[in-house]
View 1 (tube, rainbow, N blue to C red):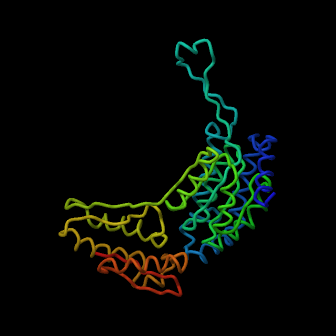
View 2: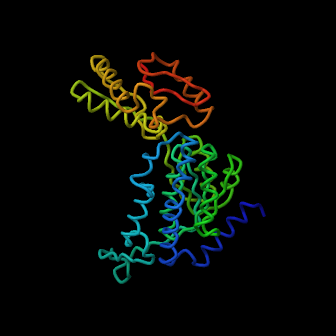
View 3: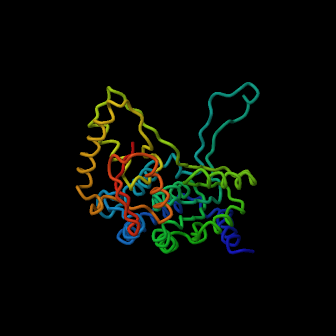
Length: 328
């Protein structure tokens, strides 16, 4: 039996034992996630800074809370009818003639042992948010952080076993080989965030076992602007959503379509917004991120030849920096 098979067997044994079903266990594990975030905020955010040059304010509203994950836990624990109270039965009052003498109801049950494959662009958020939901619903979860965001993967692999049940929530580190090995095994549910090419591989692997999946995949996000738009407002929204996390967000605006008479005014407005957000030297701004690695840096650098640079275009290969750039 391989190491991954042993790991899955322990998680399945823990789930089959009923360990994850009591609300007290699930609440205790959610509280453990809170403790992990509160007590290790500095270490987690330092890892994010090393991987993506992320600023603390992207993740926190005030110390010591990492806002999105903490808010998600607070919402779940304050809404027990959603997932904490296992065994909650919702009776159906309207029944067809054929089942009129029966009791018809919906009862929420956990899937079992889930696989969570995180993404590098939000390497904490896209591991912990599905984990929080899995815990609340009474599942076990095998966690596979993205190896591309190596510093964050390392800190999560060190911290999660210290705070959460080791049998129910193991962490697997490594690259594509480890992911492929995990996908050969039968899970009861798979969460994946990333691109379409890997999404197809995961869907194909899941289909062999009829495993349900949630795939959050990136794509094209065009914006259309016409003459009636409020250009200063649009420019501000575009600048924030496109350059947040150095553009490495799956729902960031991908390209713009607009009449030529709008184009010149929009470029000027974008230039003013970018200077307001990141200063005259964006590279020196603590708010402007970096490209995750050399491979993606060169991939994006190649796109600069696909049009005329209207704004930005600065490059620093050693720092994985690409200035906030707009092409015609």
